[in-house]
Image 1 (cartoon, helix red, strand yellow):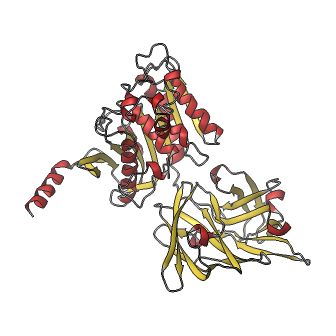
Image 2 (cartoon, rainbow, N blue to C red):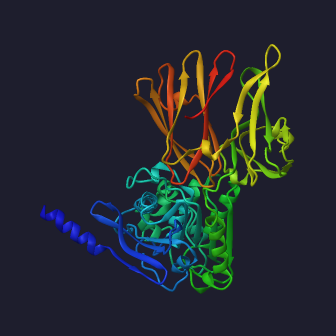
Image 3 (cartoon, rainbow, N blue to C red):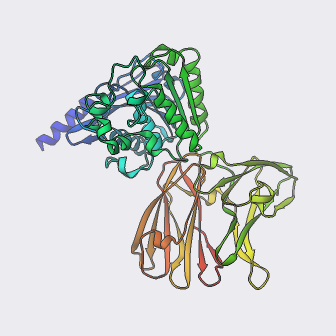
Length: 524
């Protein structure tokens, strides 16, 4: 009992909180503990009801030094006067632990912020990361490795570690190529075990290429990565500017929104990064990705539309009917979100519909978007309430057509975070198989947990699925994908959105193994 009381007293001393002119600052919050090492952050929250978008600052210092302490009058803390909450994190340094301890720590910090978002008036669905040098490396790695289990660590489970956007100031991106990109002015042998990155990895990078690749942000670049703003001086003698160029090129090749700013003559940080040109550019980038609520949804979401070949010679197309029941003409945007990609970059068309009128777009992916083939969700965005229905079908073997109706779902029919929904009637046996469609309704990545439950109430399998922003995925033979291999005549899926502020549209299709005729199953 005495030791417990002592711990409580120490915890109170570690925390200090005070109110500034327009911000409450809480210092020394323990967001986790690595063995006996407390992991601390300082939290700056503007006064007001919130919730506030969050900027997470990751300090530099060659992974061997640095601190979360910030200049109260500097450009980082300045963001709290612009309506943003700010968290500044410490993490284990290379003298305390080798990689991946550092990325595991900052990911744990992100998950803590999401877990405690309501307590601190944070909108953790809109979360930017910003760092310099070693911190730039860590924020770039946060951006590219979202959802990568190998780097996640174990602290603060149950929340995702993805971010909305990344500001990377002159961070290393590839420890395999870094030495070869050094400028003549460099005094660091980046191939040596004694280099900062060698101390981080516990080896000379050329002697441990797999470890070096594991710690490199470029290794994990994928199309669902968030937008990046990368800023580097052309005369950086510490981290070669080629590192930022390499990361930018990799992101662009993957279709990721990346902006590279090379500052002529600038070195490793300093005034040019926050001058009258660069700071407004950085703040505009943050505003573009954090100002609009990430949960601001399209009005209607069609979870799937197709122009694609199916089994047995079938060729499925989707026709879309949109109706305007109102007394005024309606302008609306129709966007194709695609399959397993970031739907925010999908093609869109602006259309109009007269008052009280309906319009049908046959084979909508071809007639509206000009696609030869495709599969994915559709979003219908309008200030005027509309109703819509999609029909996906293929010619039948004996004439006519068969297929299924796919409703355009309003937000009331989405599955939101904290409100799991069940899809009954799924099965996988010789007669039927079941596919599951999940469509992300928000503009940030969302994690979704799916559980398979028997008629008796036993959990038969579970799996977490990661959806890109406004992205759709189809899980074919979902019963098998959830790890259940025995025949199942009837069960149900329980769909839970893990990400705070997230929402998905979902349905399952129970498909006849002989005729391939699908039967739609909606969440309840």
